Image 1 (cartoon, rainbow, N blue to C red):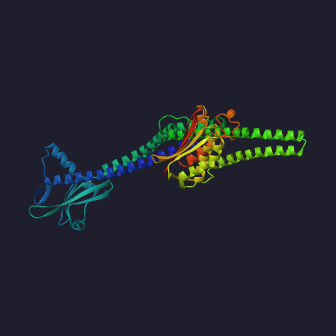
Image 2: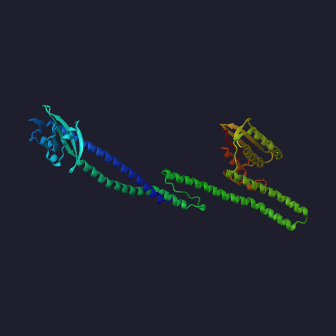
Image 3: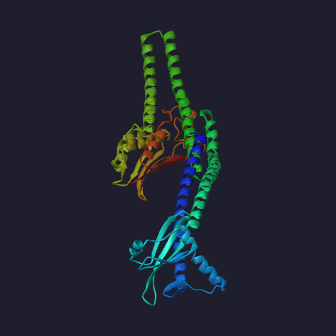
Amino acid sequence: MKPRGLRLKLTILYTAILGVVLGGLFAVAYYLLANQLDATATDELVERATALKGYLRFENNRPVLAFDPTDPEVAFFVRTASRYYQIYDFSTGEILDQSADMAFLGLQFTPNELHSLTEFPILSDIQTDQGKIRLFSDRITSDYGAAYVMQVGVSLEPSQATLQHFIGLTFWLVPFGVLMAAGAGWVMAGRFLSPVRSIINAAQRIDVSKLDRRLPVSGTGDEIDQLAVTFNESFARLERAVGEMKQFTASIAHELRTPLAALRVEAEYTLLHSESLDECKTTLASQIEEFDKLSRVIQQLLTLARAESGELRMLREPVDLTTLLRDLTETFSLVAEEKKISLELDCVEDLKVTGDRQWLERAMFNLVDNAIKYTPEGGRVNVYGRSENRKVVLRVADNGRGITSEALPHIFERFYRADPSRSKEIEGVGLGLSLVKWIVEQHGGSIKVDSQPNLGSRFSIQIPED
């Protein structure tokens, strides 16, 4: 996905979410404001009506508003509160007193409507030509027992105007806020995706010939940094794999080229210079031995390739290592005797681990075989097995030629041979230890080597007991 497309999608998503949030906030604000204005209008109306009742006096059995007109505060309140005011005789339905604004609006109840009112006080909203009016109707009884109905009203137009003004502001502010959010989202998305563009540009410059390059890491530790670090780790593994593949290819070419060239030269020489059938047979017999060596090399390569690709199954079953090591030393005892090498077994009884017996036997076979090969006559090879700290420890130690410090880091690499010039007489192509390392790791263990030239080597394996 292109950064521009992701940037646009993030901006649209952010803007849409903010638009919904703003719309919701304004809707809630409108609801709360409308309720508050309505409650305020009602409270004001009830306060006015209650206060006006205090100024009612009955003269000639008729209710009138009596107040001191010289008191400006009282006069202003009474005029304001009685703007929408009228009073009825409840028994006849006759209007006894009415304000000018109420008379102008023509708001009055018929006697039947008035007598239908049974509960007081009553609040009612009435739509007029001048807007909506809220009336407070209350029943008043004189000292002589006469009943009257007083109505006090208040206009709801100020509240309606406030709500309309709020809606008008909403229609301006919400789109403006959404546009501002879209602009800010576009800028912020661009800033946040800037490292992604840097990663893309850096990744486009990486190819097979430039696997040593890495993606930039800003050091913030965020998800983008973690992504770059993960890719860099993958590139590092890929670089190692490609390097191993190149080395693997070169090693195969080197290992196969020499014997094939020798076979060709020997065959050409025999064809040109052989004088008898017996001489041809001798040459062919020698070549068969070389073919066997090549076959073993190819078989080892196939086994290692299948192992590393996961085609070979690794069993998980109890393995008696004591018996395995005892059988192995017996197998090599004759070879050791021929080279006058002392082969010793130092293993506790009932040493067990969960794994694949055949693969473990192959790993120990390679280690013991190497130890005997690189130990001169009169030397010593020791096979050791113990259980230490919930781990099985296997060691193969010798006092042979040893390995130089320069060669130790590469000893488990394929086709690596520590001293080819001194090992020409020893059969092998440097695949055994790499296979041993793979077997040990498949069992969840580790292998290390300690060695010094002319003092011998010690290979140590640790495998969890499970």
